[in-house]
Amino acid sequence: MRLGIKVTPAFVVASLALVVVASGGTAYAATKIGSAEIRDNSIRGVDIRSNEVRSSDVKDGALQPRDFAPGTLTSGSKGDKGDTGDAGVGRWLLVDASGAIVAQSGGFSIASAYDQPGAPAGAVGNVYIDANEDLSDNGIAVTVALQNATDQNADTITNGRSLNPDANPEFSGEITSTMCGIAGVVTCAPTGTNDRTHLVVSPRLSDGQVTTSTNRKRFYVTISGDSTDLTSDIPAVALPANAPQG
Image 1 (cartoon, rainbow, N blue to C red):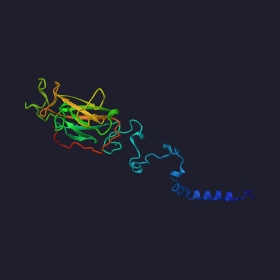
Image 2 (cartoon, rainbow, N blue to C red):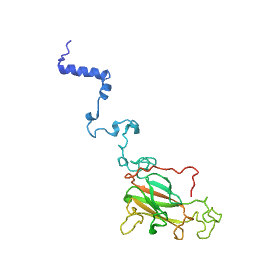
Image 3 (cartoon, rainbow, N blue to C red):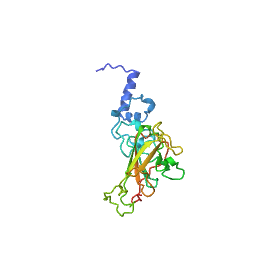
Image 4 (cartoon, rainbow, N blue to C red):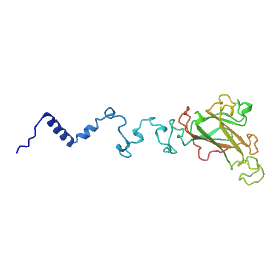
């Protein structure tokens, strides 16, 4: 019986192609497909098997926080400066009673603190911090950090039980902060600090008096918001276990 199939060059090529596919030719072809063969925007999430793309497959610096949907970055994710914390979660630092940074998420430095040499008269009692980024789109929060293992007024009481006013300096105090360089609102006195990359922290006693070297306390600063434009590579520093807290 004759099938009536006309053998042409095209028929022969198609038949050979089927043989190649059947013998594993697709695996060979897959190794030869490069980016030049893929149309832009043609590969989608549904085309990639789950957990196939890992951090080792991504070029360093290729992904930025802006490439992720809001809320998908969690604590521990990093911005584009390595140890500087992650966008949206915030940066932080802990300043001790002397005005020195003892722990931080990275990028901060002290520009002027309290009555250190070089501090102008109008800056005495304040701490000026270089955040190494424009703070215009960030929030600033500061908190007095209690230190109940330190007797600051020599009354041998460090547990905060006295009811007299300002009798518990280890627990009491007030603190304010703001970004520097806000026209008509805030002017920062130390040289080089009156711009929006700096912030000022003003610790006070609970009655509003300026603190002194005998009654100053630690404080925390937290910067919230987008922190991907850092201009410094100052690394993160963790507070060591059993480190002095004063």
